[in-house]
Length: 112
Image (cartoon, rainbow, N blue to C red; front, side, top):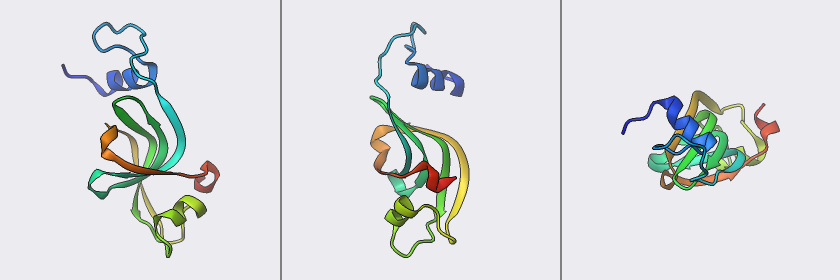
């Protein structure tokens, strides 16, 4: 069964059943807020992180192409972007939750 992007987002955000398209809560969604997410293969993103039973969703995601830090990735989580930080807009990312290796929660206000 193939799903469109819109159908996948409906399932992820509204808890719709793929088969019945009825509102059933097959997944419990946990929203973490703004987080730096380190993914499989070394990709690093910043965005609003939500995780359910199968997927991780990073909304309003930006790829952190260059950290621009002197103290590692944790410096970005604590202080926000630095003068040498380069971010690339990427939209919404949906991935299997196993592909999320770790996440660092950060303050939304540091990234505005």
